[in-house]
Length: 155
Length: 257
Image 1 (spheres, rainbow over the protein chains, first blue to last red):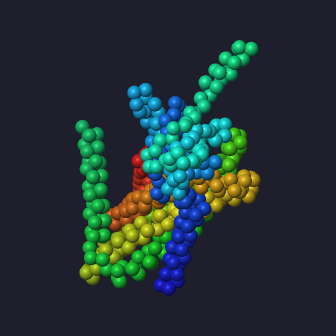
Image 2 (tube, rainbow over the protein chains, first blue to last red; image 1 turned 90 degrees about the vertical axis):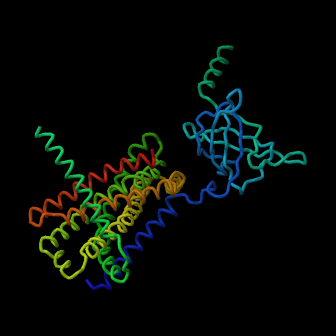
Image 3 (cartoon, each protein chain N blue to C red; image 1 turned 60 degrees about the vertical axis):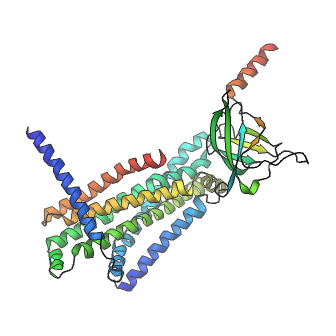
């Protein structure tokens, strides 16, 4: 084994490792997460956040625009407040927008569905730290079943 | 009394061993860098330690990925969740199996060879001859082998991961008929570059240091007889495997706990 062939083989070894790294970077992992760039914060108050977690996705029409960054109770009545980091590419949500806690599939994860509202002269665009006033809380299965049974009983 | 006596002696011996190993590594690595002298030695060791371990790593990676695909499919298909096969294969390889199995194979394939080589150098007094010629054996023999091990193991683990995921793809998609697009897109949405891929690389870097260090130290301090070298080689494989598995739990608890 001459030094030259050895150097060649080590070169091939390194190239194979770089190829593996590229494969992992481009095909396996998601590096183009829209929540990794510049973001701004929106907050929303809910009655019940259900199974929402930190890092749960925030979607508009099914497209990922941000992630939940914090969930905590605030105020005298301990209302759950959700903070989300939204990508700067989507920075024109009017204050008439609606945030709902939805579930992907029947047993899927919960996420926040944002719905942009109408815009006219009197509607402000939400800035950093802006609060979305219209919210729909998570559906709680037990409550739904309770309501269903109650409505059955009335008939 | 003799039981405590024995226990105390064992503990003292172990602590002494750790100290000796640290001194050996420090003397080998700390010093003026001599790139012109060291680079050819390093390339030679990269060839012996890295390139020659490539085949066993790639083949085992392929088979482990294929087995993961097969086993995962038979369980997931019961829940109608066979799309989750992609993330299952990718995450178990990237987080655990890639770094750990690579380190275990590396300890068996390259670590034992390093111990035997250096032990035999000691037995045939090649190390003493180097010292007679005013060449520091730690800098000339130990240092290039250490760096070669530390550089090659993360690279081998990356190859293991890539080939393993491809093996899972072959079995899951081509053979068992999981949807091609779903396999990759569900995988991409649940694998994170920093949390999963990079933590796996950090893990395998830690394993690389530990396995190479144990192999070199066991070789350097081997009793210079045939049974001594044989015992040192066995100890290398046993100690590094145990260290890898134990450290893996600690690292997992820190990274993903």
